[in-house]
Figure (cartoon, rainbow, N blue to C red):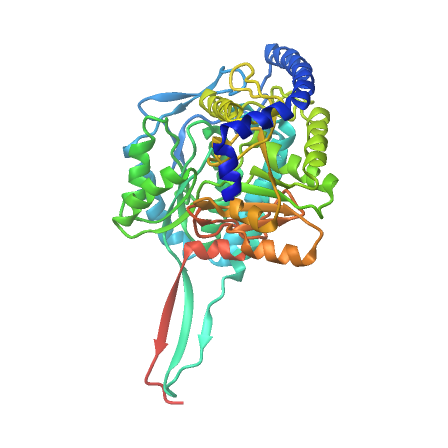
Length: 536
C-alpha cells in the first residue's frame, strides 16, 4: 500500500505509466468512440418515442394513504420520468400534519393488530403477496416510469418485493419465545416476544417496491403497524402497494403512506423520528442522512435499523475463473445502471490476470450493454435517477483521468441523466472513484500483487456493506471471506440479495439486519416473565 501511494504521488512515474498505456489507450478510444456513436444514436431514437404507462387506474394513485383513506394535501409535487424529464403525475405533498395523522392512525390500529393471531396476520400477508404477483406487469411499469430501470429489471424487482411478503407471511408463525431453567425450585422463567409498536419506514428510490416490503413485511408479521415515507422521486410504487394492501384486507391504519417533496422531507422525517408514539425507525439511504435520523431518534430512545451507504470491493485473484469473474462483475456492477447499495464499486484485480480480465470485461460491456429508455425491450442501462447523479459519475471519471487513469470503454456523459458505461484502468487509491460511493455505471480497476495488499485496500473504508471476490483456492476463500470487513460476502458470486439471508452491514454501513429469520427480530421486544412462589 505504501509503494502504491508513493507511485501515485510521483509525477514522473505517472507520466511513464501514461506513455506506456498510450498505444492501448488509442485503441480503446477508437472502440469507445464507435460505441458512443452507436449508443447516442440509439438513445436519441428511444427518447423520441412515446412510452405510455398503460397502468390500471386503481394502481396509479396520487394521494397520501392514511387510516385506510386516500387523503389530499394542500399542495402537490411532480413525479418525473428520469429518462425524459417529463411529468408522470402530481402527488399530494404531505407535511408534518399528515405525518402526525398517520402516526396516530397507526398507533390506534396497533391496539387491535397486535392482538390478531400470527396465523391471521400470515394469511393477510399471503393475500398481499398474491396480489403483487397478479399485478406484476403494472407494478413493474410504475417502477420503470419513475425509477428508470429497464422493464425486465423492474419485473425482477416485483418478484423480489413479493418474495419478502411471502417469506414474512411464513415467519409470522415462527416467532418463538423460551422457557428457561430457573435457579430456584419455586420459580418458572418465560421469555416472550412482543411487537415494539408503530414503526416509521423511510425508503430510497432505487428499489421503490422491494425496500418497502422488506421492512413492512417483517413489521406487520411481528404485529407492528407502519407509516411509510417513500423517496420523493418514486412515490407511485408505494401508493400502489397501499392499494393492494387494502384489497388484501389489511385493516385501516396498519399500513400508511405519506409521500412528500424534497422540500418537506426534513419536517416529515423529523415527525417520524421524534413522535413519542413511534417506537421504531427503519431507514435505507445515505450514511449522512442516517446520522441525522439517528440523532432525531435518540431523543426518545427509539429502536432503529439503518441500512446505509456501501463501497463494495470486487476482488479477482490469480486463481479465479476469469470468465466467471467477468460475468459476476457485469451482474454486480451494471444492475440498475450501478445504482444499488451493494453493487461493486472498487475492482481489485491481481497482476497475473489483470490484463485478461480487463480485456474480457470490455468485450462483455460491448456485447451486453445497451443504453436507452427502460421501456425499450433492448435496453439494459436506463438513466441515472437525476442530473445530479450523472454529474457525480462524470466528475469521478474526470478526476481519475486527471490523475493518470485510462479510459478503456465509455467515459462520456450522454443526454440528460444518461451515462455511458465506463471502464477505467490504471486506477489508484488516491482517486475519488475509489474513495467514495459512485452509484453509477463506472468500473475502476486497480491492479494488486498480494492477498494482503488487496485486503488492506478493500478494508480501507469507513463503510462495509457488501464485498465480492473470485478465487478457486479454498484456503484463500476462507481467509478472505473472514477478513473482509463487510456484512455480506459474495464468494464467486456477484448477486447476493435473497429474502432467506440477512441483509446489512458493519462500520458506518448501518445497524441491524433485514430479511431472513433475523429481520423480524428488529420489530420485536423480548419480555421476561418470572412466576414465583410456586408449590411444586
